[in-house]
Image (cartoon, rainbow over all chains, first blue to last red; front, side, top):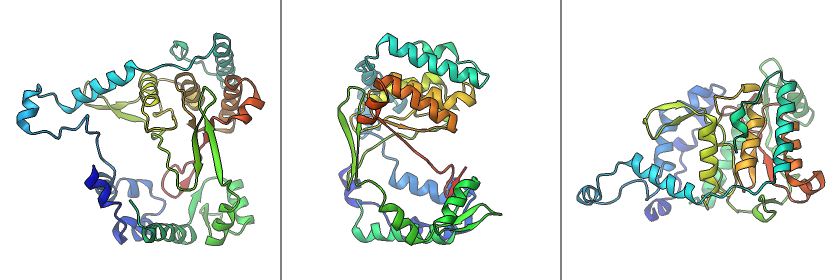
Length: 119
Length: 203
């Protein structure tokens, strides 16, 4: 991570991509779907957390149970969710918010699915 | 991370693109307003080319500092100078399911789980709805997303609306939660984003 920070963000003609944007201008798929955008996204932004990505040796990885990245990510998610505390909204306010949402839906000729209110 | 000369190159490239390529805005009134203030507007193609002077003049009207408060009423986010605040993306329609390892549509259960998760991430200072759920009517989606964000998050909210009606309903929800409009104004909790729907395009 320190090496990543020291490297900074690359600012070149290629990364600014002014000519590329001018050519593609209002073609969203052309800009967002280009190989150039994906390549630089991966190089500059895609940095998984050290808790998720393995940075140990393969031997250590096997000794620790060969837990793949999805398993480690789910475990980390579980740990974080265990400490979650919902905002303490009183029941009267929750009911008022439900009323506003329901009236808005009625105005649109729609219904709010009941699971929205399963707090 | 960025040298001053890099910052200047990025800003210069942005000025160049806004003044030459311009932005496509699918809204006649917005184009009219820009045209009245000095943008070169091509009504047939719905494109406004925005000169540097207009951008600089507009930036001078932006407040030097903005403060935002969490559910408990504490100031936790200040937007000023070079301060940096992180927020998750607000509108992905797909996600990578960690159980099946397949990409699928996001639903309300995912949204609530991600909100709860991000609420506990110390480096994420503001909350968004995080996804666009596919199991609620699309015409209600923005207001439902906002409602769920307020219900499940303690953080200041980076909100958004898909229509004027939706925006008004969201203001009503926030006002009730804050204990009235005066309280809502006293300790702002939400800022609304007007994002381009694609690079250089506003729909």
